[in-house]
Image 1 (cartoon, rainbow, N blue to C red):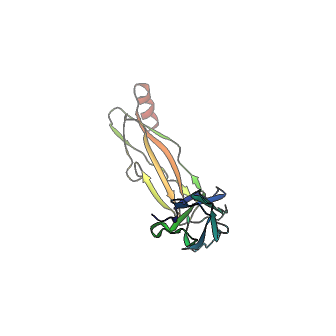
Image 2 (cartoon, helix red, strand yellow):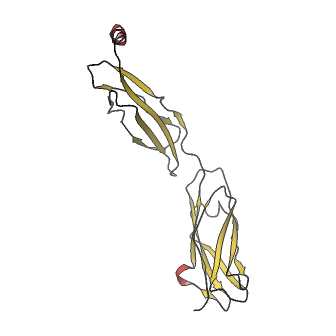
Image 3 (cartoon, rainbow, N blue to C red):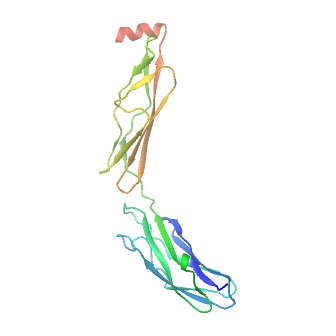
Length: 207
């Protein structure tokens, strides 16, 4: 079996500082092996989130592996995850390139915050008279500052505001996602509680 060099897919957080790209030879050989590298498949934010990728690395004889260190730049710009490829372009004798794993996909996950939520309802409690087994609740949906935000609602919709009495709090969750896939969540509970005795009289007095 001839020795060949390969690299593995790697995912890193934007604030990790450094990406360690493992370059391996299997089986290991007794002499140093130089492996040439090249960056391909850059996104439209070409190189904005990482520093210089080494053009080559050396694997010491007998060790079987080394790491290529790539600086990661933690910027304040809101953007989508960065993805690019690093390819093995050359390998010194006596090793060769492993054709099936000679290219690694590198993903830099963004740490940007999601849309800013400027209004989120607090928990809501409504009181129902004993003759009713469900009550109606209306609330104002959450608001966020970002443009092009899609809102996903988990739980009762504002237009479907029938809450069963006495069952317990119903969780409502608004999930706001911006164009880069960043998510912010607004959560609150809605409850309908049956009133009894003097509470019923007070209810009708102010109704």
